[in-house]
Image (cartoon, rainbow, N blue to C red; front, top):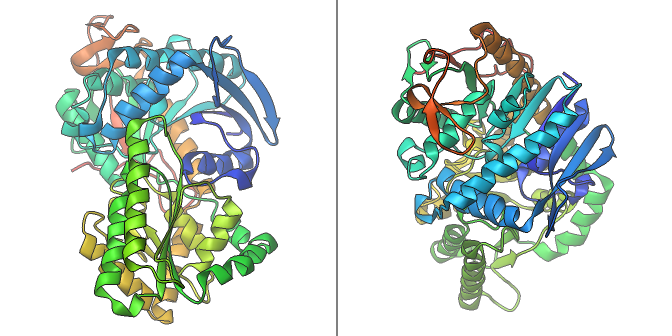
Length: 518
């Protein structure tokens, strides 16, 4: 499948080395670079009166179609609904949800506008692959435009517990729209379980022992497809001459001390405040590491127009300042907090110089920083990964030290263990993780997902394709204006939701890859 159209809010960096914290664009870029295709998304521009046209740019081997947003669209679709309603609820923070029906209307309108642009570019495509929470309604918009290609959706962020998601007033219409896709993919088993529970309780679905779900009028598939990284490419980057020069230049900054590194977007889901407090607890309870270790926290600025993010930046600056004021010495700064973006090459160099990678989100779909830290290590003298059990990566990286990011003492103890871990154990843990990352890289992820999408599309056709409007609970079709009307054609027909998942190899038969839910 070489003519895939990708849709995401973020377009890829034109230069690989411009990429930094934040895995979606980096991950998909690596996948699409191998196969070619077309990528449609927002170009980051805000126009007061956009003509709603597009800019097309050829980036070998794929084509980019860049769209602008109006000021109203940016405020309502992106800032308002996507990041002040969807983002917090999907990460389990219903208390931070700010819902406005007008924002939801703009969200659906932008989904429809992007779908119209995509339809014009998809005439010779093999499939459409839609990415992440910005475009939950894209499938229904494409079906209304008559697109009958395989259309898949992948959620990069977590899918929350059912009752948490139900705090969002429009949750039924929003999640009901997913039924227009042929395949809905998740990062982890936990996300899939949460989705099945939600579908059963809130969409009136009946989940059977063989993994089929009666949801009304549509047949689609769901499955677990953990995203990987370009493991060999990132390892080669860490070994490159450029990274080596940077390592030698930066080595003096470590001054013989052991580095504990964290790299994140500046976001309240990343657990940065608790991370700072855990490092301070390490200093308080482990005198041996006083003046012998330091925390380097890189937090790339993100969504600073949203008050919660600006407030978090202020709190982190105050907290790091307090810790340093209390513990620092003339020749030692315990917390080095940097609020800016770093290149991939510089990050690879810093990962290899650090003894501990500290990845402790409160909730995360996957977290590719954890995987990049491992890929950057030297096999002879690798660092240790300390990883939140609430990151999707924890399901696969058995060599990491798993922690509860809400447990300050537990995180401090894990850092202490990582800092004193013997070389033999560090090597053993590294070998386990690098083997996993090589066997399940971003290229295998792409192949697994697209193969499953073709199989899911065949099942949809075999089951009969119905009207373009997706199904909300109990046979009611979701209308374009957000209202609900009765399904036509003599009522609704039950649909099969097949819980498919990729095998552990790169090439798997998804027609047979079904599993039981209970």
